[in-house]
Length: 98
Length: 392
Ligand code: SF4
Ligand code: SF4
Image (cartoon, rainbow over all chains, first blue to last red):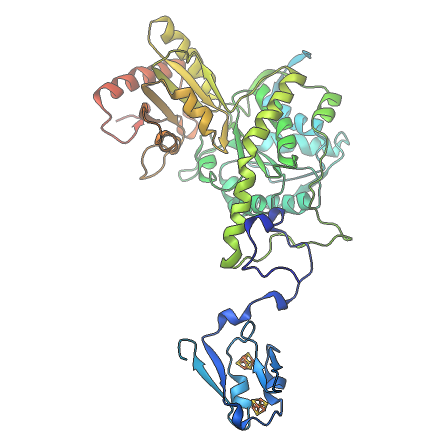
């Protein structure tokens, strides 16, 4: 994967700022847009994967214990996972909050 | 090697120079006083003398847009414009330089409306000062021809890859008939062969040009473009030296005329420089201490050469052919002042604005500018700039 645009220096820029290789949205830090983030209380989690299915960023994966969790590089904080979770595991909190 | 000189209108000679360079694509909209240039090119293409694609468009905005596509495809591309036409191209000028497309454009400088004027001054050039184009001002017909040839070599140089504007004063230069030596075809082909940009559109090597740049990358992109500007001046000087070796005519970013030991200097750009030279000659004979500094390369601005040329002077009289409305003097004068700022010992700058909208300044007019300017340097200039010959 190409470098993320945050990491490119002016020396990495092609002549005329041309884009010379195909890319995908995988390189975009969509997490930068976020004002709220999902927080979890896994004690109620059914590991049903509904949040995983509904996340429009496709950014939810399973952690080592098998719980479903968002990757903050891509999570844009839309709150869909929290809305869809049947057992209210997920609570959206403002970025500034702990 | 001195070829044959013959009398020819400068616009026609310019078009012939584009033919000598074998331009592949010309897209242009005719506008006074540039018309003769593209009309003659259209004839050359129609008669089969120049094997190029001539794209007649419905506006200057489209003319330069078509040039973007053609230069991006790797074709040697030419266009010409003037005055309002250059302003209509304005946003596309940034696209051409940002995409590093080696387009060559002749600008027959013209005043901007209102009131409507088709005559020459530098308002159009000054309005596009910061668009990232290389900009060269010419003094006479021979120089126009020579600079057009150099422009293709400069623009397409692998270190440069930036568009070039060649400025010639509307009517004062574009429509006069002068004795001009046309370089020979083979010589031009050897001097400025077609050079493909390392990055051109091609179906088997897909690239995206002029892409979207969010705040996180725009600064880096602009800085990369600015770094290219840093090597432009030495490359131009090198190409002008090669030109001198081959064709015998020498050009420099800043040229001095009778400057040696002169305490007072007059500063000009464009075709007025020749008239100013005669005025300097006459006043020198009358014992006035005056020299002339002429600027050929306007962008990138040749700071070192300019500061070296004026370092011993006490007074610098600057003639602008453009008003910087509400600004700190004419645009050239205020720019020269900032170029001088870091010098410990700087000359006093007296700013004149004149020759607007085709108003002529004769030799006597320049003599008056010099005499008045020297007096103002002594007594102090009350107004921000002096307007030449206005009826009060
Ligand atoms: S907040 Fe939206 S983007 Fe983030 S994990 Fe939940 S569904 Fe996906
Ligand atoms: S939707 Fe809720 S319960 Fe189901 S896996 Fe996700 S967090 Fe656990």
